[in-house]
Image (cartoon, helix red, strand yellow):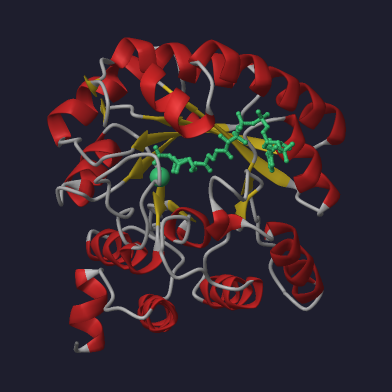
Length: 307
Ligand code: HMG
Ligand code: MG
C-alpha cells in the first residue's frame, strides 16, 4: 500500500495592490494596478485585495478602485481559475459603491485601539462596530463574503502595547457579525513570537484556527518568526505584500507588510504547499518597484533577482 503524502497547505492573501500601494508617494493608475493584479494571479495567488472604497481625500492612492474592478471583470472572463478580489469598505457608503462596482467580497476594518480607530476611520471602536453591523447585515442579504480586520493587535502607534483581551472583544464581535475570517493586523510590526503566542492563546479560546489570519508588517524584521509561531499554533492563512510594499497612512513609522516573496520562500523551504511560483513573484516585485521608481524592499527578491 502506497503511503499518502500529507499536504501541508497554507493560504497567502496578497494585499499589495491595497496595503502595498496605499502609502506610496507615486500613485499608480488603475491600469497599472490591474497589471499588477494580473501578474499576481499568474504567480498563483487566489485572493488578491484589489483596492479600497474609502475617501479619496484620505487615501488618494486608492481612488478609482471601481475602475480597477471593471477592468478585472473584463479579464476574468478569460481566466481559468476563479480569483477573489476583496476590497476594503469602512462604512455603508463604501459598501454600496463596492457592490455597484461588482465586488463579490469586501473587508471591514476595525481596531483594538481607540486612538487608531479615530485616526484611521474617524470614529470610536463602538461607532465602527455599529457601522460594520449595518454593512454585514446588508452583505448577508446580498450574498457578499466579508472578511474582517482588527488593527493594532500587538501595539498601537499612539497607545503603545495592546493586551489580548481588547483584541478578543473586537474579533469575537466581527465573527458574530458573520465575517468568515479575521485578519490580525500587527500594524506597526512590534510583534515577536512571545507576544504573538500570548495573543493567539487568548483568541483560540473563543475562535477556531481557520477563522484567523495573521497580517504582519515587517517594521522590525520579526514577521517571518511570527509566522512560524502562528503556524505552530494552527494558523494557516497569512497576508503578504509583493516586494514588501506598503504601510498604513495612519500609522506613522509603520513599514510595509511582510513581502510575499519572503513568506513564499520561507514556507516552501519548510515544506509547506503555497501554490505560488516564486520566480514569477520575483518578476512581479521587480516590475512593481520599477513603476514605483525605487529599489525593491524584499530581501528574498533582491537575492533571487541578483540585485
Ligand atoms: P469621515 O470624514 O468621517 O466621513 O471619513 P463622513 O461620513 O463624515 O463623510 C465625509 C465625506 O467623506 C463625505 O464627502 C462623504 O461622502 C465621504 P463630502 O460630502 O464631504 O464630499 N465619504 C466617503 N467617500 C468615499 N468612500 C467612502 C466614504 N465615506 C464617506 N467610503 C472614512 C470616514 C472612513 C471615509 C475616512 O476616515 C477614510 O476614508 N479613512 C481611510 C481609512 C483607510 O483606508 N485606512 C487605510 C486602510 S486600514 C489599514 O491599512 C490597516 C490594515 O492593513 C490592517 C493593519 O495593518 O493593521 C487593514
Ligand atoms: Mg496593514
